[in-house]
Length: 508
Image (cartoon, rainbow, N blue to C red):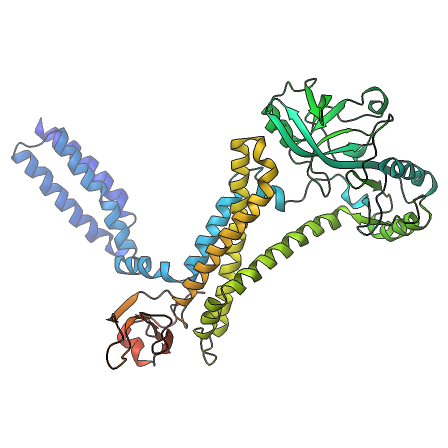
């Protein structure tokens, strides 16, 4: 019985070893397999002769054989080289950049409809190359929405460059639904406005031409308002919703990818033919024009026509922009805010930045450009990661807590971004100052010099030595001391042999 069990055990062990031996380099494979088979054979026979062969000892032997894969890997890849790589690679600048890029990819993969992707991915407008937006100039007087609507209808009749014109009027509003009150932006639109922007509803329908006279209480919801108030209930069609105290009936829901150009509109109602109170400087109007000739040809001509003979009052001047121009304006505004925030933080941390410049790479070193390029690249990637993380965190909080905090989402995201940017920029500067000025690796070799200045004002504190022998960073006990300050000292070529560095091993 023991002989059959022994043969079966040796057969399985040999099978595992043969599979593992395929990893070992060919010239070492025979010797490696002979050593492992001899060890397993002696172990198995010892168990039989000592009458200790049982299921538990068989499992131990097989587990030991599975460990041959680890040994085979060490033969394939030099163990000393692998351990050395695992030690020095986390200190290199490339590892720092790879980790930041990995964090960015994780944020991008956080969700298919995340706030960051919604911000940076253009909306899927239909035929955006033939759509223009018309809005009063910032220095112009208030334009009544009904007047702009009548003028837009006249433009389509008198100007061949304008094939279709729709009008909208947006204003801050208060919505009350199943989840309570919510401050949003609402818009009155004429028929065809949503269709012109590609707003094909996922539930119900959009606003039709008959709604202006027969269904002034109809409303189309944005996807975000549908989810916040009705939790994505597909039976929402026909349910009531209150807008500024007025009862409305839901007739449609727009897709998540739909975005009104320039505004975060939560719901849309018909423009209406009945009486609407005038709301100067509170309800703002605009128009969308479809031009068959294309934007490049028609934009300037249409703007000249509207401002000169468009039927508008003489004190009203309008801006005619394409959808792409609006997207660029939004990105430019964000870029300006981010730039101002970065400049403010650099001004508040001018001591650290000045110290970074004073302790940077020497002008005589050929790697001076790598020093500053690495710092700028690292800081820029951190800035993008902090911005995306702030947007994602606010999105998750809004989705979790509900509608009562959505109106504070923009300000909260900005404050989170400023706090995160402060932490990231401070870390980036400290990380840069703790690196070798030649190979950009983090300094790990430490030499303690004492805790106080002493009688003869000898240097004290800590010396951080580059393991490549490129230089020494002296960190004093008291950073504000005039007798002993932080400084970088370059070492000559002889120190590289002492440190055992591999010349040219730095990576960036």
